[in-house]
Image (cartoon, rainbow, N blue to C red; front, side):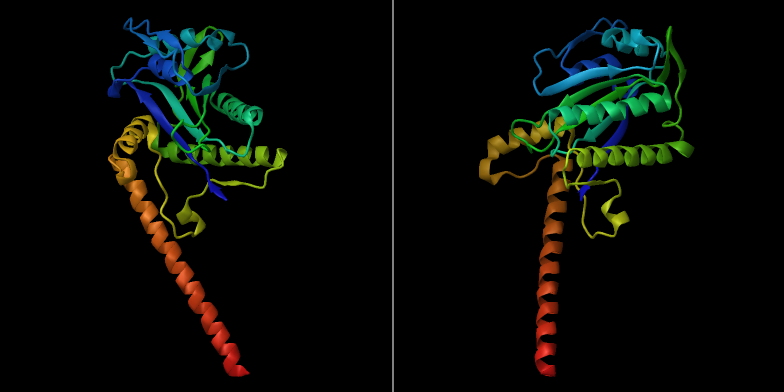
Length: 272
Protein backbone atom coordinates (compact mmCIF):
# COMPACT_ATOMS: atom_id res chain seq x y z
CA UNK A 1 0.00 0.00 0.00
CA UNK A 2 1.60 3.26 -1.15
CA UNK A 3 1.26 6.61 0.61
CA UNK A 4 -0.76 9.10 -1.40
CA UNK A 5 1.37 12.17 -2.15
CA UNK A 6 -1.00 15.11 -2.41
CA UNK A 7 -0.01 18.71 -1.80
CA UNK A 8 -1.96 21.96 -2.09
CA UNK A 9 -0.28 25.35 -2.01
CA UNK A 10 -0.94 28.92 -3.06
CA UNK A 11 0.84 30.92 -5.75
CA UNK A 12 1.19 34.31 -4.09
CA UNK A 13 2.60 37.68 -5.05
CA UNK A 14 3.87 37.93 -1.49
CA UNK A 15 6.65 35.51 -2.46
CA UNK A 16 7.35 37.18 -5.80
CA UNK A 17 5.41 34.69 -7.89
CA UNK A 18 2.86 35.11 -10.66
CA UNK A 19 0.20 32.85 -12.12
CA UNK A 20 1.51 33.45 -15.64
CA UNK A 21 5.05 32.41 -14.73
CA UNK A 22 3.81 29.34 -12.85
CA UNK A 23 1.68 28.22 -15.79
CA UNK A 24 4.48 28.78 -18.32
CA UNK A 25 7.00 26.82 -16.27
CA UNK A 26 4.75 23.85 -15.57
CA UNK A 27 3.44 23.49 -19.10
CA UNK A 28 6.69 24.28 -20.91
CA UNK A 29 5.27 27.22 -22.83
CA UNK A 30 6.09 30.86 -23.53
CA UNK A 31 3.65 33.25 -21.86
CA UNK A 32 3.80 37.02 -21.38
CA UNK A 33 2.49 38.59 -18.21
CA UNK A 34 0.52 41.64 -19.35
CA UNK A 35 0.68 43.08 -15.84
CA UNK A 36 4.44 43.66 -15.87
CA UNK A 37 5.37 42.90 -19.48
CA UNK A 38 7.68 40.03 -18.54
CA UNK A 39 7.82 37.08 -20.94
CA UNK A 40 8.38 33.68 -19.35
CA UNK A 41 9.91 31.37 -21.95
CA UNK A 42 10.02 27.69 -21.03
CA UNK A 43 9.40 26.37 -24.54
CA UNK A 44 12.61 24.32 -24.41
CA UNK A 45 11.62 22.56 -21.23
CA UNK A 46 11.52 18.77 -21.44
CA UNK A 47 9.64 16.25 -19.37
CA UNK A 48 6.11 17.55 -19.96
CA UNK A 49 4.12 14.46 -20.93
CA UNK A 50 0.83 16.25 -21.46
CA UNK A 51 -1.04 19.48 -20.78
CA UNK A 52 -4.63 20.66 -21.01
CA UNK A 53 -7.05 23.13 -19.46
CA UNK A 54 -10.37 22.10 -17.90
CA UNK A 55 -13.02 24.83 -17.60
CA UNK A 56 -16.65 25.06 -16.45
CA UNK A 57 -19.33 24.62 -19.09
CA UNK A 58 -19.91 27.76 -21.12
CA UNK A 59 -16.54 29.28 -20.19
CA UNK A 60 -14.54 28.31 -23.27
CA UNK A 61 -12.60 31.58 -23.21
CA UNK A 62 -10.69 30.26 -20.19
CA UNK A 63 -9.28 27.33 -22.19
CA UNK A 64 -6.79 29.82 -23.66
CA UNK A 65 -3.88 29.55 -21.22
CA UNK A 66 -2.60 33.09 -21.81
CA UNK A 67 -6.04 34.69 -21.46
CA UNK A 68 -6.83 32.66 -18.36
CA UNK A 69 -3.75 33.51 -16.33
CA UNK A 70 -3.56 37.12 -17.43
CA UNK A 71 -7.19 37.44 -16.32
CA UNK A 72 -6.20 35.92 -12.98
CA UNK A 73 -3.44 38.50 -12.58
CA UNK A 74 -5.66 41.40 -13.67
CA UNK A 75 -8.39 40.41 -11.20
CA UNK A 76 -6.14 40.98 -8.18
CA UNK A 77 -5.08 44.35 -6.80
CA UNK A 78 -3.28 43.45 -3.58
CA UNK A 79 0.50 43.12 -3.65
CA UNK A 80 0.21 39.96 -1.55
CA UNK A 81 -2.70 38.45 -3.50
CA UNK A 82 -3.03 34.72 -4.05
CA UNK A 83 -3.24 34.57 -7.83
CA UNK A 84 -3.48 30.79 -8.28
CA UNK A 85 -3.62 27.55 -6.35
CA UNK A 86 -1.51 24.51 -7.16
CA UNK A 87 -2.21 20.85 -6.53
CA UNK A 88 0.75 18.48 -6.86
CA UNK A 89 -0.16 14.80 -7.08
CA UNK A 90 1.92 11.66 -7.49
CA UNK A 91 0.49 9.36 -10.15
CA UNK A 92 0.72 5.58 -9.63
CA UNK A 93 3.62 4.42 -11.79
CA UNK A 94 1.78 1.18 -12.55
CA UNK A 95 -0.51 3.07 -14.94
CA UNK A 96 0.39 3.61 -18.59
CA UNK A 97 0.37 7.05 -20.24
CA UNK A 98 -3.29 7.09 -21.39
CA UNK A 99 -4.45 5.87 -17.97
CA UNK A 100 -2.35 8.50 -16.20
CA UNK A 101 -3.84 11.28 -18.29
CA UNK A 102 -7.38 9.98 -17.83
CA UNK A 103 -6.88 9.80 -14.06
CA UNK A 104 -5.56 13.35 -13.74
CA UNK A 105 -8.16 14.73 -16.13
CA UNK A 106 -10.92 13.17 -14.05
CA UNK A 107 -9.53 14.67 -10.85
CA UNK A 108 -9.17 18.10 -12.48
CA UNK A 109 -12.79 17.88 -13.61
CA UNK A 110 -13.78 17.11 -10.01
CA UNK A 111 -11.98 20.24 -8.78
CA UNK A 112 -13.60 22.38 -11.48
CA UNK A 113 -17.04 21.05 -10.62
CA UNK A 114 -16.47 21.46 -6.89
CA UNK A 115 -15.19 25.03 -6.85
CA UNK A 116 -16.26 26.47 -10.22
CA UNK A 117 -12.66 27.30 -11.13
CA UNK A 118 -10.50 26.56 -14.18
CA UNK A 119 -7.73 23.95 -13.94
CA UNK A 120 -4.54 24.07 -16.00
CA UNK A 121 -2.95 20.62 -15.94
CA UNK A 122 0.62 19.56 -16.69
CA UNK A 123 1.69 15.92 -16.50
CA UNK A 124 5.40 15.55 -15.78
CA UNK A 125 7.64 12.59 -16.49
CA UNK A 126 10.22 11.38 -13.95
CA UNK A 127 13.48 13.32 -14.00
CA UNK A 128 16.28 11.80 -16.06
CA UNK A 129 18.44 11.19 -13.00
CA UNK A 130 15.66 10.66 -10.49
CA UNK A 131 13.27 7.90 -9.46
CA UNK A 132 11.77 6.59 -12.70
CA UNK A 133 8.50 5.87 -10.91
CA UNK A 134 7.99 9.56 -10.16
CA UNK A 135 5.18 10.35 -12.59
CA UNK A 136 3.32 13.36 -11.23
CA UNK A 137 1.04 16.20 -12.20
CA UNK A 138 0.72 19.89 -11.41
CA UNK A 139 -2.83 21.23 -11.44
CA UNK A 140 -2.91 25.02 -11.38
CA UNK A 141 -6.33 26.47 -10.61
CA UNK A 142 -7.75 29.94 -10.42
CA UNK A 143 -8.62 31.36 -7.02
CA UNK A 144 -11.79 32.86 -8.46
CA UNK A 145 -14.88 31.32 -9.98
CA UNK A 146 -14.75 31.23 -13.77
CA UNK A 147 -17.80 32.70 -15.49
CA UNK A 148 -18.75 33.01 -19.18
CA UNK A 149 -17.58 36.63 -19.33
CA UNK A 150 -14.59 36.52 -16.99
CA UNK A 151 -13.57 35.77 -13.42
CA UNK A 152 -16.02 36.13 -10.57
CA UNK A 153 -15.89 35.88 -6.80
CA UNK A 154 -13.00 34.47 -4.80
CA UNK A 155 -13.21 30.86 -3.67
CA UNK A 156 -12.49 30.91 0.06
CA UNK A 157 -12.88 27.28 1.11
CA UNK A 158 -9.13 26.63 1.01
CA UNK A 159 -8.17 30.00 2.49
CA UNK A 160 -10.29 30.07 5.64
CA UNK A 161 -8.85 28.21 8.62
CA UNK A 162 -12.23 26.81 9.64
CA UNK A 163 -12.68 24.95 6.33
CA UNK A 164 -9.23 24.57 4.73
CA UNK A 165 -8.04 21.47 6.61
CA UNK A 166 -11.29 19.58 6.02
CA UNK A 167 -11.31 20.53 2.34
CA UNK A 168 -7.73 19.38 1.78
CA UNK A 169 -8.39 16.12 3.63
CA UNK A 170 -11.51 15.52 1.55
CA UNK A 171 -9.65 16.25 -1.70
CA UNK A 172 -6.80 13.94 -0.70
CA UNK A 173 -9.27 11.14 -0.05
CA UNK A 174 -10.96 11.82 -3.38
CA UNK A 175 -7.62 11.64 -5.20
CA UNK A 176 -6.75 8.35 -3.47
CA UNK A 177 -10.16 6.92 -4.34
CA UNK A 178 -9.79 7.89 -8.00
CA UNK A 179 -6.25 6.47 -8.07
CA UNK A 180 -7.46 3.16 -6.70
CA UNK A 181 -10.36 3.06 -9.15
CA UNK A 182 -7.90 3.63 -12.00
CA UNK A 183 -5.57 0.92 -10.71
CA UNK A 184 -8.42 -1.55 -10.43
CA UNK A 185 -9.75 -0.63 -13.87
CA UNK A 186 -6.31 -1.28 -15.33
CA UNK A 187 -5.97 -4.63 -13.52
CA UNK A 188 -3.23 -3.48 -11.14
CA UNK A 189 -2.97 -4.87 -7.60
CA UNK A 190 -1.28 -1.78 -6.14
CA UNK A 191 -3.35 0.67 -4.10
CA UNK A 192 -2.69 4.08 -2.55
CA UNK A 193 -3.49 5.08 1.02
CA UNK A 194 -4.47 8.69 1.84
CA UNK A 195 -3.82 8.35 5.57
CA UNK A 196 -0.43 9.09 7.09
CA UNK A 197 1.72 6.34 8.61
CA UNK A 198 0.74 7.58 12.08
CA UNK A 199 -2.98 7.42 11.26
CA UNK A 200 -2.48 3.85 10.02
CA UNK A 201 -0.61 2.88 13.18
CA UNK A 202 2.58 2.21 11.21
CA UNK A 203 5.87 3.00 12.95
CA UNK A 204 7.70 4.70 10.09
CA UNK A 205 8.98 8.20 9.43
CA UNK A 206 7.59 9.66 6.19
CA UNK A 207 9.79 11.49 3.73
CA UNK A 208 9.14 14.99 2.46
CA UNK A 209 8.68 16.19 -1.11
CA UNK A 210 11.86 17.92 -2.28
CA UNK A 211 10.36 20.17 -4.92
CA UNK A 212 12.14 21.32 -8.10
CA UNK A 213 14.75 23.60 -6.50
CA UNK A 214 15.97 21.13 -3.88
CA UNK A 215 15.88 18.29 -6.41
CA UNK A 216 18.09 20.25 -8.82
CA UNK A 217 20.56 21.06 -6.04
CA UNK A 218 20.76 17.44 -4.90
CA UNK A 219 21.30 16.18 -8.45
CA UNK A 220 24.22 18.57 -8.86
CA UNK A 221 25.65 17.44 -5.53
CA UNK A 222 25.32 13.77 -6.48
CA UNK A 223 27.24 14.35 -9.71
CA UNK A 224 29.91 16.41 -7.96
CA UNK A 225 30.39 14.15 -4.92
CA UNK A 226 29.88 10.76 -6.55
CA UNK A 227 30.03 7.89 -4.05
CA UNK A 228 30.79 10.36 -1.25
CA UNK A 229 27.49 12.15 -1.78
CA UNK A 230 25.86 13.69 1.27
CA UNK A 231 22.57 15.63 1.14
CA UNK A 232 22.94 19.39 1.07
CA UNK A 233 19.43 20.79 1.37
CA UNK A 234 17.42 20.65 4.59
CA UNK A 235 14.66 18.57 3.00
CA UNK A 236 17.11 16.04 1.58
CA UNK A 237 18.76 15.78 5.00
CA UNK A 238 15.32 15.15 6.50
CA UNK A 239 14.74 12.32 4.04
CA UNK A 240 18.14 10.82 4.75
CA UNK A 241 17.46 10.91 8.50
CA UNK A 242 14.04 9.34 7.96
CA UNK A 243 15.58 6.57 5.85
CA UNK A 244 18.17 5.87 8.55
CA UNK A 245 15.53 5.70 11.28
CA UNK A 246 13.31 3.45 9.18
CA UNK A 247 16.27 1.15 8.53
CA UNK A 248 16.84 0.90 12.29
CA UNK A 249 13.15 0.15 12.85
CA UNK A 250 13.18 -2.55 10.15
CA UNK A 251 16.31 -4.14 11.62
CA UNK A 252 14.80 -4.11 15.11
CA UNK A 253 11.61 -5.72 13.84
CA UNK A 254 13.64 -8.50 12.21
CA UNK A 255 15.52 -9.14 15.45
CA UNK A 256 12.28 -9.19 17.42
CA UNK A 257 10.73 -11.55 14.89
CA UNK A 258 13.73 -13.88 15.05
CA UNK A 259 13.67 -13.81 18.86
CA UNK A 260 9.95 -14.58 18.96
CA UNK A 261 10.46 -17.47 16.55
CA UNK A 262 13.31 -18.84 18.68
CA UNK A 263 11.14 -18.63 21.81
CA UNK A 264 8.32 -20.45 20.04
CA UNK A 265 10.67 -23.23 18.92
CA UNK A 266 12.20 -23.54 22.38
CA UNK A 267 8.78 -23.64 24.03
CA UNK A 268 7.59 -26.35 21.66
CA UNK A 269 10.74 -28.40 22.29
CA UNK A 270 10.31 -28.11 26.06
CA UNK A 271 6.75 -29.41 25.85
CA UNK A 272 7.92 -32.45 23.91
